[in-house]
Length: 262
Image (cartoon, rainbow, N blue to C red; front, side, top):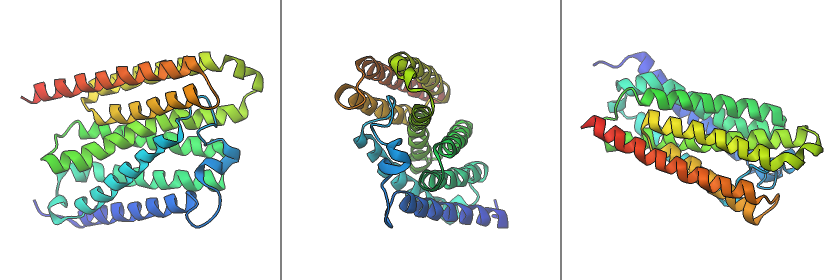
């Protein structure tokens, strides 16, 4: 198959989006001065910002995701990937996810919590679209599976829990303080919804990476609630149970996918 100008534009757009993402992460994260992400929005986005915020070490997963996105960007720019049907169908969506990724950090620094919720919700929707589309066309090999499916799966799984934490931070700053008395009930309810969505996603997409990333966030959420502030044993225990259920669902989905492939 002959490549076209559109294929070259797609590859270039993904590279430009990756550069924007990195610059956005650097600016939003305070690399050029200013507050760290945890200090932005009066600390609403910190590990103590809400009952559904993961503990600080959870955010180390961003290093893995960014490394994967950088490797994907280089790999998709190779001539062999120019006419890949997967790249042609999904590459534009990946570029959009990178732009939204970088935009979130800029939004967190310069706008408000409502804007961050809108951006991260859009990012989650785009990543969900990518995961669905990846499931329609099997990976061509281990590199494709790792850099494309694996990286996007981790990104989607982590942003799932990050969206919950971001929304909870906004609501914590917005709703009356009296509602804090029902924080345990609300938190458990939200985690049950997360479990239902993540399990359904794992079984439908037959992918393990999203489940692992979401479970990672939930485990650190549990650490934050059981050993940090604000403290909540019910939410912490529920988060651990949900994380376990999601991983089991991810393994079952993966095994089903391999069985179907055979």
